Every structure is written in structure tokens, then in C-alpha cells.
Length: 256
Length: 265
Image (cartoon, rainbow over all chains, first blue to last red; front, side, top):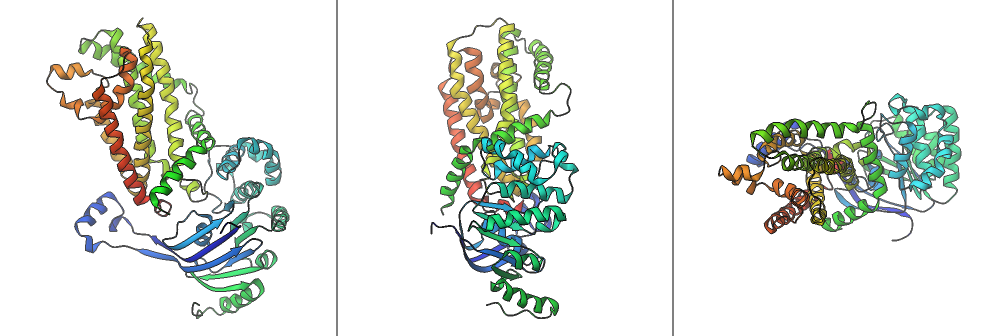
């Protein structure tokens, strides 16, 4: 496969959330070597054999309650989490936009953080200097860009991160629940940019709790629950299905 | 994909993106001295105090002529600082970059190279100061000094491997950087940095340096600079063997942990 696309085949992700008592420290590890049998492993299965194919031009929404595996799935698509079982393949220049308050140098200015983020997203220094005014303009942070980012609010982090991530002109944009934190004016701007991006036939995968946003942006939606794909299809259908269950949340449909 | 192939590719890809780690590393250096009045001059002051203070005291104690002892001390301390900084900061390379590792897809080796840049700055300044000390002591310069270049190459390679091992292992075992800091403090006193090997030989304590790989890493840089000639062949052989061992250890640890790093951070 060489064309733009994301292909997940039976992807499973298991987190080891063992604590100090069960062999996570050097001391615990040494102790566990002596009693191999008693070694406790506390494992969470964040994704269970997820199979998905996303092609060029698709705009895919991810829904599901907190902890359903949406963020994990996005990180697998980005190539940040190597699947612990199955295979994941992503072809295209990926631009992820996750957990917006990490990955900043808190003692450095907004400008410096724009440079660092842009570099980590694959821009060359010349490109960055060219685009710096445009990114700054779009972020709307004005004088705040001169201040260290430790003074920023979460909405300001989102503005900065979103401005940088969308300026690299990626082929695949992965967004994790980020639109909510910006204020109204910024959300408007972000909307415009998202539509621009979508009109170019690239891939967007987008997790959100806002069903309106999903209906707006996505032609396809995947519903995750406990790491399993519950439903996958046109947004209107999946959202209707999800709503009927989310409201009367008692039983879950069997995984297909 | 084969894990060894992936590690090779990651290392190459990281090195090719030199602008990223160069920028991050230099920014770290600037950040370290931010709001400091004296700034990077601290590197110079630190070394001057060391060479002046320890040099005069131990030079007298060990009955060493100052014109040979002071340059010896200066370059030894500079190399030692380079080694310890890459080991201790290497241990935090992945831990401190957690926010980046969980958001961006660059190979993790970027953050090890960032530490290398950060640690190279005091090293380069230190080598400059060594030459000043040589001038002040009216010592001879010669072409034999050029033998330092392969020495520095070996030193940098060993430091990169130290940092790689520490970065991976410390992400898993967070006690490691603390342990290494303590160990390095002890090693400093048993490694010929502020005393010469002759002092040890006279007292029949040869084993102290003979089985100490860090001694050889210092010697490949120090000997050409202070004696204007290549170090003896066994020094290069020992260094080469040590680097080979480091490579095997680094490969072993990296292939075990590479996929898991993002999950255990």
C-alpha cells in the first residue's frame, strides 16, 4: 500500500499499569526475579483487536465514553503507540494534536515553543521563519507570545498547538478532543481552517464528545467502547445508535 | 519489522534531522544560564577554580611540576565532565521528553542527541581553556596534538552509547540516574583525573586504572594533547573493546525496551 491511508489489522494495545509493589522499581524487579511465579502484572487492555481501514478523503469521527480507547487509537494511528498485537500501518505525513498542555517548554516564550513544535512536526527552520507570522496571526495570542508558556491557560495552549499543527499542511490530521477548549472566536477560525483542510481530500480523524461537531465534520464515525469497535458507519446512523445507548446506558451490544 | 533494523533506521533518521536536536540542545544550554548574571562564563569560572585550587594543592601533595600538572588536570576534568554529564543527563533524556515522545513521531534518539549537544558545549569551551592553560604554562604545541581527533571521536561515540543505555534503562528503572550519580562520585576518586598513573604505579596500585574503562576514554583525548603523540596501542585497543561492549549492551537494552518506552513513561 503506497497511497494515503490508515490500515489497522486486529490491533490490540495492552498497558502495563503495575505499581512499585509488583516489580516496577529496581528493588521490586530484583525481588520479582527470585519469585517469578508471584510476579503480579496489572494490565489494561486499551484496545482489543481493532480492525479499521481509512482511505484518502475520509473524515472519521471517534465517539465513546471516557476511557473507551479513543486517544489510544489515535496514538496508534500516529505511530506513537506501537500496537502490542496486530499490525498498524499509516501512509502519509501525519500531524497529531493531542493532550494540549504537555510537550511545551514552560520557561520559554510562545514564539520559541512555536519553533520547537513546528520542528518536531517536520518543518525546516526556513519554512518556520516564513510561516511564523501567519502562525502567530492565526493563534491570535498577540503579546502573550512574548511570555513564557507557563503563564498560559489551557485555551491558549490549544490555540498555539492548533495553529502550528494545521500550518504544517499535513496529509493526515489527528485531533483528540481539542476543539472544546478554545473560546468562541477561536473555534470559528478553527472551523474555517478545518473546512479548508477537508476540502483537500486528506484524512481527518477526530475524537469528540460533541455530536454536533461530529455531524458537521465527519462523513464516517466509529464508536468505541472498552477498546472494542461497537459500530462503524455513516455519522448520522452511528450517532443515532450511540445516542439511544448512551441515554439508556444499561447494556452494551455484543461486539461484532 | 525487525527490531534491529528499526533501531538502525531510527538512529539514522534522528541524526539526519540534526536541526531538531541541535536546536533543542542549544536551547537547553541557553535555558540553563537564563537569568544568571555571569551566564556561560560559569563554565570557565568552574574550571579555573578547579585547576587553580585543586591543581596547586594536589600538585604540591603529589610533588608534580605545575607546568605539566595543571594542563593535565584541566583536560582530565573537562573530559570527566563530558562523560558524567552525558551519563546523568542521558538518564533523563526520555523522562524529560515525555511530553514530546507522547505527541510527536520523531525517533526517540533525537532526545539522546539533544543531551549530547547540551553536554558538548562545556566540553568545547573546556578544550579551549586547556589551550589557554598550556600557553600560560609556556608548554610546547605540536602536530602530534592532532591525534586528539580520533580520540574525541571515540569519546563522543562512547558517550552517545552511555547516554543511550541510560536513557532506555532509566525510563524503566527510575532509581538508575540517582544510583549513577552516587557511583560516579566514587569513580571520580579512583579514576586518574586529579592524579597521574605514575602516582599509582609507584605505590603498586596499577589495578585501579588498568581495569577502569573510563581511564582509557580520558587517555585517548588527554595523552595526545599533553604529550603531543598518540597514546599507546593498548589504550586504543582497550577503548575499542569497551565501545564494542557498550554497543552490545545498548543494542540489547534498546531492542528490549524500544517499543515499551512510550507506555512506561
